[in-house]
Figure (cartoon, helix red, strand yellow):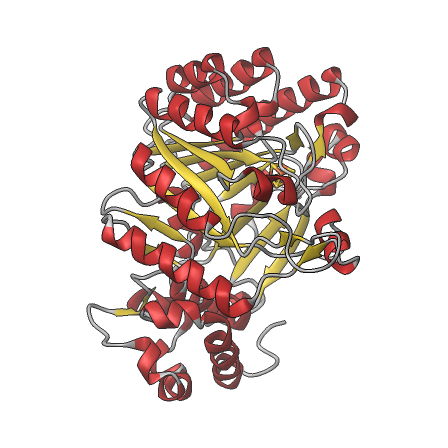
Length: 423
Ligand code: SF4
């Protein structure tokens, strides 16, 4: 089955994707906490990187033909797209613009400070990119070292100033709950406390218009996890980390940035349109090794032919050689049942401050979410707050407690749809 043919599967009625994600799985080096699909540049020859860009563009051309431009949002992420050499970077951006740039409302490019040069910022702006998403993570050299980042605070400062001078909208990622280096005799080493507050203050004073604030997730098997296990790093105290994060959130709100999603903050009108497609469970295409696409059903999905295919999820192969040779041959397709698709829609909707669109949910899945989740709403009364305008949303406290709320929501969804709903 080809990625470009999936809308035509029997029992279709899947929504035409209006957003495209392109994955560039190369980074200048591997960060200590990273378990994303990315390879250090040094492990991939320049010829292979060039073949990768050619393949991305030919695959994009197939998808643009099958799924009919114009598209509303484009997102080139990774990995680190700006880690590509200038000629490949330019070929990629110009090619994407020619194939899919017409009519695009938002085009985001991920960048890392060490590889964002004036030339690359210029190519991005000239190609039609509208938004740069910068992986800053911290402005403290000690924390950047713990994270195994290549950039240091001076690189971050230079990249932020360059990004802002490019005239593009700028978003920056920060990480909270970063562990401290252990001192040789035990206890914390000479790391800086309050680094998150200082990092955030710098970004706000510079005028960065969108901030993503993520808690560090320590994935097993990463170098950072190994250092924690060996006692070289001290895990953060959960209460202290929570307070530090809430203080950062208060600062953001004071400066006019609303928490519009669990980890995302922006003034009105500066929210990410592309990411909203994921949170609203709209269809999107993912192109490139390891990229994920989702085609969701629109309209009712009650008839038996649809029960097993309420949504389709496709992942492009992660084996670079196999993907380059024949991407469609290593495409893995999973069919989400009505129950799984409904739960995912609730889970993603509740991540946002605007919440779940209850009318669209009811039209797709045949049940009013307030009735389906009545038990959960009873348990978490204080976290759902008042409801209005056809939306079901948690409040700020609910965003902090989303995981346990979703455990209850899953029980309710399973009870409503039954254990064997087309899986
Ligand atoms: S820059 Fe991002 S994708 Fe690349 S190694 Fe670091 S965390 Fe992973």
